[in-house]
Image 1: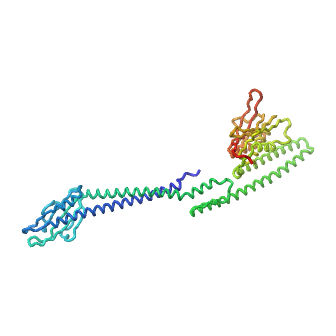
Image 2 (image 1 turned 90 degrees about the vertical axis):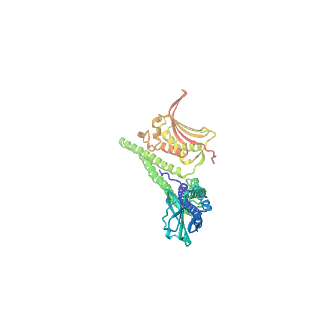
Length: 468
């Protein structure tokens, strides 16, 4: 049994989904990085602008450094309503003029002159962003570099970065879904040639071993080439098998026929009692060998035709009548009453006439050899949807416990009578190949008038087509 494997569509869909998912994850990470950078850049500009305004507000009056903090600087920082502001103004001597004296920076203030400095730090247990700006003082009373340190918590910039990342993620998610849906449609459309090729192979007749001629993409051409190569080899094997069966039938039956003829000639000679007994046994064994050979060849022919012959509509009564004539010998015991019955509206079945006739011949032959005492009846009837060929004899029949077993090859309830056990097996296989069944009905009383014999029934579905 071939293990179940995911379809090609499923495999492609899963792999494309993984690629899109990985790509989306990378893009979300990139979006978060750029959102964080953009938020930092925007709020750093506000922070730096406020620090510069504070530095510009430093003036020297009466020999003292005066700080007039501009309201606009705090309004600028107030745009981030979630954040808190910390500031510190340091004079040239390093003393704190105003603000938070414990607001520190890791930057060397002596090295900061013309270029402002921005850094990230922690103040009072919270992450802050710090801007440091220097202001040169050239008054005779106060000269040197004064510094302004302004710190701002990072809640607003984190919220802005999260919002930008969320918007980018939503947009990216929508685009990914659309891309995945488009990819699924494209995959489904691209796999149509595979589906078309499968449908073409399913529609082909089992007996059609000609090369597959279907337009496929370049990637499927090796597959189609392999199929055609396999079919050509299979066609060669089938033809070899056909020749073998024909040669075997000829080569085996010819010497058996000659052997039987020689035995018949020998039986006409005057022989003593012991020689006559030996001759009778040889004739009996030769007859059994001939029947076994014929049944083996018949079984091989039935198996071959089941896979190589297309079923055609046939009148079941015509096929059964030919089988009846072939199976009942001219030299049948005149004390045996043999009859054949068929309805006026003969049922039509889809069948291989040769195999079906062989099946009916085997059923009738089995009844003649192992069942008939004084009566053999062959009937063809139908019940609307099913057609039946019934072979009834007045013999002892087969016990119901043996019915399933006798339809198997080389299984028989008459082994002591030289039966090979192939007759019912052939009939059962032919019935199954035609969508029918082989059944048995045991002996019973018919309303107290007469005894019904053992009946073997071959049942086939009636065809809607008319026989030609």
